[in-house]
Each structure stands twice: as structure tokens, then as C-alpha cells.
Image 1 (tube, rainbow, N blue to C red):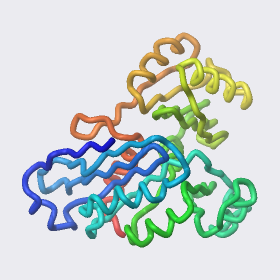
Image 2 (cartoon, rainbow, N blue to C red):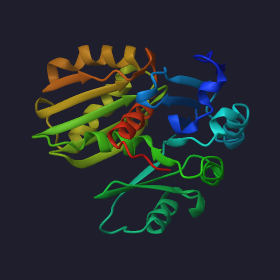
Image 3 (cartoon, rainbow, N blue to C red):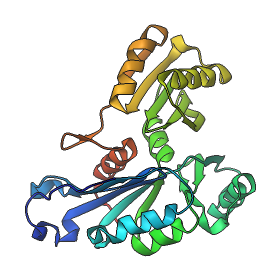
Length: 276
């Protein structure tokens, strides 16, 4: 299923690629691309494409390639953030895995695959190794040279590591899967992706993780993001049991976008001197 959004204004608005920033979201479930204007030019953001498909590892790279080639605007020379929503991510202490090759070796030893397909985010104390489909890394390097490539968990974790006096748990609910990031006084305890079918599944996983890491619910702040209907319902159900529960709405021009895309966009705004 593909959703094409009518452009704001004419194509000429996009000819100066230096005035726009590209954000791309890639997952087993689909592909999305958005253009964000420089704050000074007074134009609205644009959705280039949102396409979804049935998740399957077979043929995934071909579907991603087709989504890109069918929408050549995304191949123009924009600065870009690419978010790869991977179900398999490996968090490693940077102290013991200083190089990206070290992280890739560790990832392959656990999950298999080819070292050249593994991507790595460096977040200071930790590194996050991840991949989605064989050949995807080299395709993105060819198609989006110089773009920042993120896993969704890296952006969630980076956002969460602000000073905090107790436990803090971020739960991002997506279609059929969710990410949970648990921190204790700003230190990463757990980062994981889980499948879900019902709200009960999400609650069970959350409580199981808190029990595993000795995080009392009365001392834990919960931050929900993602699917609005699910997280709001869960928030009402769980609120009596936690220190606090807050909801994060991530919209672009009034339309919901993936949490990681929102975080990448706002990260770019915080670092005004964005470079390729």
C-alpha cells in the first residue's frame, strides 16, 4: 500500500536542496520519506512517500530499492537522516568494543550474516550494532552518500539519557512491534525490541523487564510514544502502578510520523550546523 501526498506548491520549491533536509524511515513493514524545510524559508514539510507491505525478509531489499527508485526526489542531494527499524540490535560497551569492526564481529557471532552488512551507532559509553537486510547498508551508502544512518533504538536511547533520579522507561509502540529502553539514573540498563498482538502483551513485557532489572514500578517513570490509540489506553490502565506516565505525540504538520523520524528531525534542529 502506497500513500502519495500532494505537494505543497510546485516542484520548484525543492530545487534548492540546501534548503531542505531529508528524513527516511526503513523497516520490514514499509518505507517513508519526508522533506523538512529550513526554518527560515517559511514552507511546510512534505511527505514524499509512505508505503507499507507485509513483513518478510525475502525480497525486502528489492522492495526498499523499488520505493527509492519510484520516488527519485529522495535521491537528490539533500542532507539526510536514515532510520533503520531493526528487530535485531546489539548494544555493546564502547570500552571493550572501541572499533566498528569489533562491534560488527560481535553482532555476526550472535545473529549471523555478513560483517559488511552491519551498521554501528556510537553513543559514547555504548555502541549499537544493527542490520535489516543483506545488501541494505551498501545500497544506502550509494543512494544517500554522507547521510547519517540510525537505528531507532539509538535515537530513543540518546533522547532518554538526561539526568534522572530514578528509573526511566521509554516504550515506543509501532505496528506489531515495540521498543523498550530502560535507564537507571541515566545509565542504560536494557534496550530491546518485542513483538506484540494485544495491549496485554505490551504490559506483560514491560512488567517482566522491570522485574528482571529490579526496577520497582513505584520508582519508575514511563514515557509512551508511537501508536496513539494503544499507548493512551495502556497509560490509563497502568497509571495507578507507576511513579508517573507521560505521553509523547510525534506529529509532522498534524500527521503522525514514526517516533525515530521525529527524534532525528529534532536532533538535526539542535545541531544547527548539520553536515553531510
